[in-house]
Image (tube, rainbow, N blue to C red; front, side, top):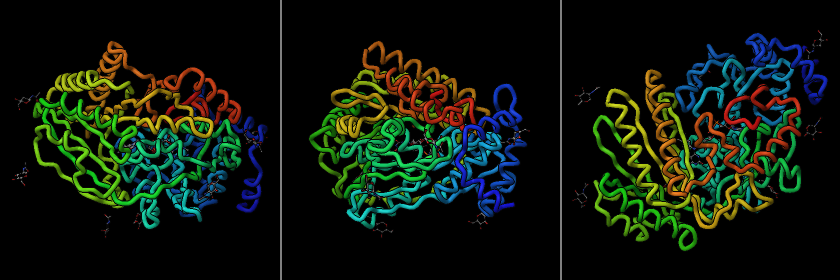
Length: 503
Ligand SMILES: Cc1cc2nc3c(=O)[nH]c(=O)nc-3n(C[C@H](O)[C@H](O)[C@H](O)COP(=O)(O)OP(=O)(O)OC[C@H]3O[C@@H](n4cnc5c(N)ncnc54)[C@H](O)[C@@H]3O)c2cc1C
Ligand SMILES: *[C@@H]1O[C@H](CO)[C@@H](O)[C@H](O)[C@H]1NC(C)=O
Ligand SMILES: *[C@@H]1O[C@H](CO)[C@@H](O)[C@H](O)[C@H]1NC(C)=O
Ligand SMILES: *[C@@H]1O[C@H](CO)[C@@H](O)[C@H](O)[C@H]1NC(C)=O
Ligand SMILES: *[C@@H]1O[C@H](CO)[C@@H](O)[C@H](O)[C@H]1NC(C)=O
Ligand SMILES: *[C@@H]1O[C@H](CO)[C@@H](O)[C@H](O)[C@H]1NC(C)=O
Ligand SMILES: *[C@@H]1O[C@H](CO)[C@@H](O)[C@H](O)[C@H]1NC(C)=O
Ligand SMILES: *[C@@H]1O[C@H](CO)[C@@H](O)[C@H](O)[C@H]1NC(C)=O
C-alpha cells in the first residue's frame, strides 16, 4: 500500500489529476474544503511521515507567536524535512482537495496566515539548516529557518545575513515580503540579497529560481509573499559582521518634536555618511496611566560603546540614563520567547520624510488610545525608522523587485502594533487600528507626503498591499501567478488562502 503510494508520488501533478481532485472534492459553494477530505489527507501523510504528523488534539507542544493563531483549530500539522517531502505533502493535499497553511517563524497575526483553519498546517521548522559557501559570500538557508538559528550558524564565521531584529522571526515570511534589518542601511533589505530560491510550485515541481532561471518568478518572489510557491531554501548573500552596539533611551511626551527632528537628521546621515548608524524610535501610550513615552534604539554596527554619533540626540533631556551593550547579533537574538499569549494587530504607513507628520501621528495615537478609557488591556505602540537610500537603490538590482519603491533619498516606515490579552477586547482593538490609520493617512495626504507602499509584513488584514506596489507591478504579479498556477491552488479560491493573495 505504502509502496504504491510512493510510486504515485513520483508522478508530478497533471492537469487531469487537478481537475478531478477539485471536481471530486466535497466543497461547498464557497469552495471551502470539508474536514473529511483533510482527515483523509492527514491519514495518508501519517503513513508517509510517521512521527512527523500531529493531530490537533494531541499537538500540545505546538506554540506560535499570536494568540489568535495559537487558538486556531487545524486538523493536523505535518513536518516535512526536505523539498521532496514538501512536494509529496502538496500532492496529497491537492489530490484530496484539502486546504492548508505554511508556517516558518509564525509571526503573522491572523488565523490561516500560518496555521490552517480546518485544514493542514505545513510546518517547515525541520527544514532549518544553514550552509555557508566555500568562498564565504553566500549561505543556503532552509525555508523554515529562524533568525536566531541563522545568526547562530553564521556567527562562528564572522558573518551575518540581512536578518530580523527578533530571533524567533522566520526567514520565510520575512524575506518573501521584504525583510528590514539593522544591516539595511549598509546592505539593503533581505529580499534584494537573495541569489536563488529553491521552491515547490503549485504543480508540486521542485525548481530553482534565480536571475537567469525563471526570471519572472525571481522578480515575483521578491515581494510577492506566499502567492507563488513554498520556498524550501534561500541562497542569500552574507557579509562580514562582528559584535554591534545597541543602546536605548526614553524621553517624555514633551520632547517628541525634538527627538523626531534629531532622528530625521540621523536617518539622513544613515543614508551615506555613516551606514553603521541604525536608529529606530517607538512611541507608547498608556491610557490607564495617562503617560506617553518615546524610546529610541540606537545601534552601531561596530563594537563602540555609546558612539558619539548619537550625542546630539542624547543631549535632549530624558527620563533615564542611556543604557547600552555590545553583543553579537547571535547573542542579542538568541532567546526563545514565550509564545501564544498575546493578541496583536499590525498596520503600516510609509511616507516621505516629515517631522510634522510624525508629531501629528503621535498626537493622534495618544488621542485615540485615550478614547479606549482605562478599562481595556490594549497597548498601542508606533514604531518608526527609515528605508535607507542604500536599501532603495538595491531594490533595482538583478532586474528589480516587485515592491515599486523608487524614490531619491530615504522614506519613513511606520509600524503600528496594538496588543491585548483577551478576545473580549478584539472589537475595541480593531476599531482603534482603523480609526488611527484613517487619521494618519489623512494627515499624510494633507501634508502631501504619503507614499503608497504598505509593507506586507506589517500590513493589516484587508489592506490592498499589492495596489501599493503600483498598478504595473500588481498586474505583472497577477499574470505571473496565473501562469504558474492556472488552477488557482495558491489563491483565495484555492487551497492556500491565508495572508495576502493576489487573486
Ligand atoms: C516580534 C516581531 C518582530 C518583527 N521584526 C521584524 C523586523 O525586524 N523586520 C521585518 O522586516 N519584519 C519584522 N517583523 C515582521 C515579519 O517579517 C513578518 O511577520 C513575517 O511575515 C514573519 O515571517 P515568519 O516566517 O516568522 O512568519 P509565518 O507566519 O510563519 O509566515 C508568514 C507568511 O509567509 C508564508 N511563508 C513563510 N515561510 C514560507 C516559505 N518558506 N515559503 C512560502 N511561504 C512562506 C507563510 O505561509 C505566511 O503566510 C516582525 C514581526 C514580529 C511579530
Ligand atoms: C474522481 O472521481 C472519478 C469518478 O468517481 C474517479 O474515477 C476518479 O479516480 C476520482 N479522482 C480522484 C483524483 O479522486
Ligand atoms: C513535547 O516536547 C517534549 C520535549 O521536547 C517531548 O519530550 C515530547 O515528546 C513532546 N510531546 C509531544 C506530544 O510531541
Ligand atoms: C548560491 O548561488 C551561487 C550562484 O548564484 C553559488 O555560486 C553559491 O555556491 C550558492 N551558495 C550556496 C551556499 O549554495
Ligand atoms: C544616571 O547616572 C548617574 C551617574 O551614574 C546616577 O547618579 C543617576 O542616578 C542615574 N539616573 C538614573 C535615572 O538612573
Ligand atoms: C555571546 O554569548 C556567549 C555565551 O554567553 C559569550 O561567551 C560571548 O562572549 C558572547 N559574545 C558576544 C560578542 O556578545
Ligand atoms: C479609570 O481609572 C480611574 C482612576 O484610576 C478610575 O477612577 C475609573 O473608575 C476608571 N474607569 C474605568 C472605566 O475603569
Ligand atoms: C510545473 O509548472 C512549471 C511552471 O509553470 C512548468 O514549467 C513545469 O513544466 C510544470 N511541470 C509539469 C510536470 O507540468
